[in-house]
Length: 87
Image (cartoon, rainbow, N blue to C red):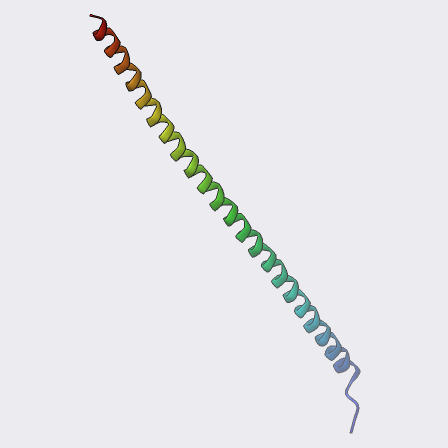
């Protein structure tokens, strides 16, 4: 049997090298994609936590406004009661 031509052997070696490089690039791409997805997941978690904190803060501020309004009404009523009790 004849030996294959040198150009065929070179082509075969280059093809093998290209396939190996393709696999390495694919693995590198998958690793980067995995890291990006992990980072995205972490950022989503942080955003969710910050939104919850903001909601809690807003609810607390609304409650304080209501309490302040109730206290103002209470003070006004007490003022009026004092004025009317002296006369």
